[in-house]
Structure formats: C-alpha cells, structure tokens
Length: 412
Image (tube, rainbow, N blue to C red; front, top):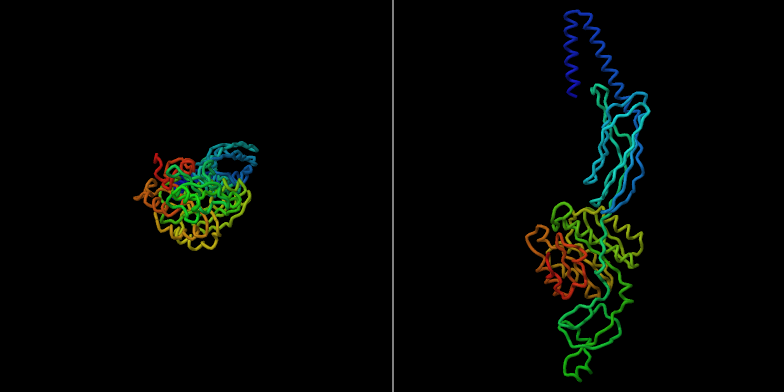
C-alpha cells in the first residue's frame, strides 16, 4: 500500500510538470507508467483467479489426545508465473497454524501436509486456504480464499477409570463389613456385630439373644438389580461456580470426568443418561450403545461453562427423571452443602448418589471442599474429591475409598 501511494505521488508530479512544461518525453513516460500499473493490476487479478487449492478429506470428528493429517495442493492454471504466494489456513484450532510462502511457475503445483494435534474439545473450522498474491512489483496485492473450509468437532478425552466402580463395593469400617441398603440382595448369608448406621430392620434377634451382642444380618449384593439400574451423570456448568484458567478449569475437568464415566459404563452395556446446562441445556435419557456414547460426547464437546442455572436448581427441576433405584453421579465444583437436600429424594427412593467434588481451592478459589465433603459424606453420599493437577484415575479409585471420608486422601 505504501509503494502504491509513493507511485501515485510520483505520477501526479510528472503529470503536473508535463502539463506546465509541455515536455513530450514526460507525457510518454507518464503513459508508460500508467500502462505498467494497469498491466500489474491485471496480472495480479488474473493470476489469483487461476489458482486453486485441493484440500484432502479431514475427519469430521476427532478427540482430545489424538492427531490427524491434512493435505493441500495449490495449482497455478495460468500461463503466467506467480512469483510470490503467501498461503495461510483459516482456522481457530488452538495451538495450530499453517502458513507458507511459495512461488509457482506456469501450469505448476505444490503439495504439502500438516499434522494436527487435538488439544482442546470443541467445534473448529479447518481447511480453507487464503492466499495473498501480487504483481511482480508488489503494487497490487490481492487476498482471496481458494476453497471452502470444513468443520471438525473434537470430542473430550475419555480416560481409563479401571478402579472406579458403581457395583456393590465393600466399605471398610472398624474392621467390619457392610453393604449399602440400596444395594443388598434378598438373601442374608452371614451375621456380624452391629455398626452405627446399620438399619435396625436387619437385626438378627436370635443371634443377638444367643451372643448377648447386637448382631445384624449381612446380605449378598443384588447384582441383577444393579445391572438394570439407570446411571445418570449430572454435570454442573453454572458460570458462577467455575474456576481455573485455560485447560486447567473445573469445567474442563468436569467434562473429562463425565465423558470418561459415560464411556466406561456404556462400553459394558449399561444405560447412561446426561443432564447438564451450559450455554444450552442438555438432557439425554439413559440409553445403551455406541451411538448413544457418540451423542453424549458430542454434547460434551459443544458444552460451555456459561450456565445460568445452579446445580441445586438443575437437580430440583430434573428430579422427575430419577426413577427409583437410579444411580446418580453428580460432578460439581460448587462448595454448597445444600446439595444434600436436592439429592435426598434419590436416596429416599432407594437410589444411590455419588458426588465428585472438584476442589475449589486447588483451582484458585478461596475455600476448600473439605467441609462440603464432610457434610455430604455424613449425609450418606459417596464423596470423591478431585484436585487440580491430580491424576483423575487415582482420585476416582474406589479401592482407596476406605471410609466415608475419602477426601482426606493424600493431596499431592
């Protein structure tokens, strides 16, 4: 642009001098420059229109942690050379750039490949190549897209959680064993001493009278009932609860945990549902199968942590969807003990609630999740705590759930 203005000023001066002085040579020189500019302009426009770009197929879907390749070919169909072509891919994919400078002879082409590493979930545009060309003097630059782009949706990562279990688990306490009331089967296989919190309905009076100690029946777990239970994953994406920066946010941790749990249990044939609200509300009823997994991952890929509905309001509004004996997994960064009230009806209907707390303090908040975890655990909920930087598979290791106070595990 600066070159063009300099040339315009020079032409204006020549024109003024030619008019005032009547120099024939200057008039001829002026005409020559004007013709040269016109030819340069036509060259630039013509050569750009004779360029095209062929982009290879890119997958419409990928996943965080995976990679794929793109292939591009720019061809010059003109009889004129293109001495300077600046090509740039128009994309909003984080951490990815595709730019190069090349020159093409008449009827020439150039091919190159790029590798894309998927680092962040979400929808992104790819594949559209924008070129900037010019005439040999660089006076008439032209920018133009050579092809249409494509959209790719990057699904969140799904981590292996081999030791997180929803099946009836022993909960050790004071050297004895007990089963959650909602998980017991119809058959009592043994008796043991009473532990605080055991149901009085399970007292075995005959053995109590014989031993002089209060004894209760211990039941085998009802695996058949468990396999028929619906699993609901409830993810808190309320904007007022979110903390952290970049990829290390409570929202990103929550999405990764939700996608990992969905895959884990859908892969085993169970029915999994999803409830969350971010920039849009998402409610996917419990279903089984690979197609349903793709639907859940797609919803989570598009989800933004900008919800206007708190986790308490979300649970209260969706309470009707939790059938008797449902398994409800709540993933939340909220430090809000009032959540117990919203979930009490699930336990009252013989359901099971697992709460995964994303420790606010570790993500930059001012309060830890310790008090919330203590309160929720004492209210009868299974509570896990995930801290920023902690290996998620370790934080959700049911083998480490040695008491209701799982949150006291090593913070490192």
